[in-house]
Amino acid sequence: MKNQIKIESPIKPFKKQIEVSSDKSLSIRCLLLSSIALGKSKIYNLLESEDVNNTLKVIKKLGVNYIKKEKFIEVHGVGINGFKIKNNTIIDAGNSGTLARLIMGLCSGNEKKLKIIGDNSLSKRDFSRVITPLNLFGVQILSNKNLLPIEMCGSNLLRPIIYEEKKGSAQIKTCIIFSAINTHGVTKIKALHSRNHTELLLKYLNYPIKIKKQKNYDLIELQGLNQFRSFDYKIPGDISSASFFITLTLLSKDSELLIKNINLNPSRIGILKILKKMNAKIKILNIKNYRGELVGNIKIKSTRRLKSINCPASLNSATIDEFLLIFLIAAKSKGISIFKDLGELNKKESPRLDVAIKFLKMIGIKTKRVKNNIKIYGNPELKLNGKYHVKNFLKDHRVFMMSAIAALTLDGHWTIDDKDSINTSFPNFLRIVKNFGAKIN
Image (cartoon, rainbow, N blue to C red; front, side, top):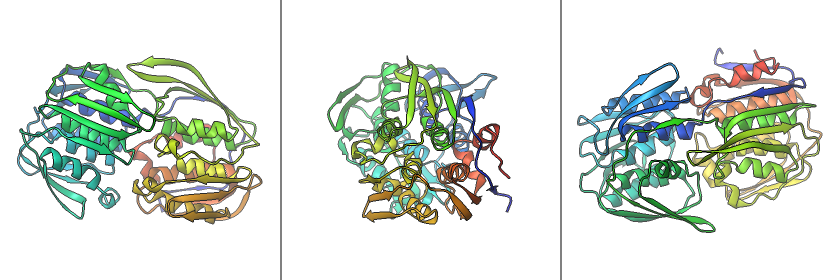
């Protein structure tokens, strides 16, 4: 098969300094918000990936023009409720749950019929989580058991809502916020803590949004139909992409790495907090505030004596995209690691909790699962010598990249399918790994 890689030997010690791909969450949100701004926005360092390219195609289909220039993309915003949509327009979100759910909120003020579709993986994911609040706003939605394809028809007379978001999902929260922007009146949201890029962007744009932080949730109020102007924004590096190289360094021998210009938003750095509790040698350096986001460098050194963790569930939301890597590190740590309330992992591109348990069993790591809780019995001496084949059946980029990191740090002979899956979020992943000296065929 051409769409696979083979790894036959572990990576040798390295000392490197790198930058990783731009933040995907911010890239998509900046494009969507710039599309309803007034004027020409300039977005620098936009992530070049399938998910972001699909976002560009979608806003183009909605009547938003953009120009790709040498150092930035210039988006010509059409204002709130300014999309030019033909009836029965088809919106293809590809593999991106973020794009699919956010565009539904953004288009809620439009009265023309839209059809939202996606690839095989996205078409298996639950959309009831955004259908329910959008129905309350007054959006009409037809679906087959809350799955794609979805037909929706919005309204120019949406009603503001009061809603409690109980899953800790930034996609749900942002969908509601985007719909509220299209709505006359004040929408109120009580939301479990989740990544807050949308709120920070709106604050930077001086949008009338109020946020009160409580212990376990945020109280958000925003006034709809307040037009904002175009903006300039430079996207920092993605902590999710950086996490693969953090893991590679921790589990390699005598290695050291500096990752520069990373988004260190507190709602995204759960992996750093967890790894520090596991005795990982990690330092955060040169933190600066950019447009409300914290940006800085991460320094990592190989760590031989990693220890197990009883992971606080309060860190789940801030770590949701990195748990596959946390599980891999727990497999090489001393003691029994415990993780709780991870049902959201099975709502991602693939059922990642199920996949993780299958993967750990394949490499000889004992696990115990009760519902959405998992115990991982670590083995600091784990070293493989067999043949391992990872079949990535739902184009899950994170499963592919985690498997590559495992192959480079645990030894053994590996075949890993679906190489092209990295194009959704981190197309340069293999090129960077090879620059570290990894032998990948």
